Length: 319
Image (tube, rainbow, N blue to C red):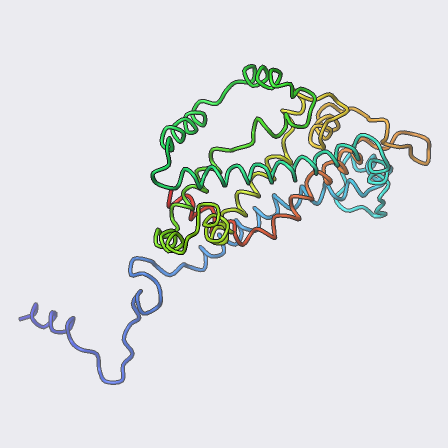
């Protein structure tokens, strides 16, 4: 009798006007998902603040040191968190003509030209490999993936560049890395995800492969193209190893010059003189060059950020 009474209490309907308990489905959350506790939310917020501080504080120190005077840098032990008298003397010294200005121009030119060429070659090759029935498509794809798993070493790459007569030319910074396998796979997967009905409808209207690529595929692939273009631009802008192997110092890009400043500790002749007649503080010049090497990519990223997640996830899932 006691068990029957307990069962009736558990299954008894709620009284009229009583508000039923909200379940996970009613609250907009899955049934297996619990509502986060205030302590958990506070811990997540604290972790986010710490991560943001770990990124922003070093960047703030770099910018502040580049804007500080020699006296402040020396008094601060080589680093300044907030300059009391900001000055652009370090930027004026390195941009007044000389190796840094020339290296900045080389980096901009190589990045722009290399990104356009790599994006064009990757797009054409990915479109060809994404279409069924292309002659030799599968063997070419396997060969490309083989180079991704087993990349050539430094010596074979150097001998190839030397054999092609590209030593001490800017082509050596572009041609050996013209097509990236990862970017190719992302674009190929994105092209394969385009409905086949669009291709068939275009062919019924008399469109050829080039017209289909230009009028249909490329407009639908803006997100993937923006992401791949950003990957290529960052890769060309940050490249320094190939420049150190293939180029003479007169043709170095900005990243190789930055490496010489920061790691090698070299003082280039165009660093300028302070009012006291002494060479400008090394930390000030180094941080100014570092800011010049970092800010351009930071300015480009916000324009493609909205395409970043969509392009990468779509190409990766459908590949």
